[in-house]
Length: 142
Image (tube, rainbow, N blue to C red; front, side, top):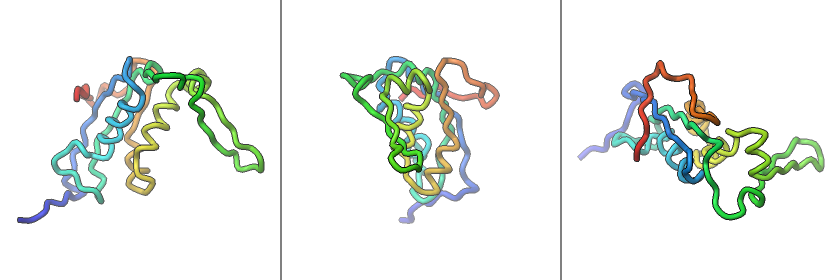
């Protein structure tokens, strides 16, 4: 028996929409990361970029449990000495409504060239409107 290995020429990319309204942030991010990697396909190959495009709508309406709205912190460093910046989930949601979802998905993607390529196929929108109707996206129901 031979093992199937997908080739870059054999890959056909589909477009999927995930509605995050009322769903936990981490669950939506995990689904999106799996689609971006191509793990939902029977032809998944770990060393080949075989994932699909993902559109996440209503990212600002994703729910978090407990006190994460105030206690969950995001950190980034400016590069200058002593300039470690922090902001809570609630503050980031007000200022940049799509960034928590993007960072959650980015954390679930491999930190290599395949992961960087997969993240270029991610589109996150705070509201229900998106500009990709021409690609005929399918609603993800799993």
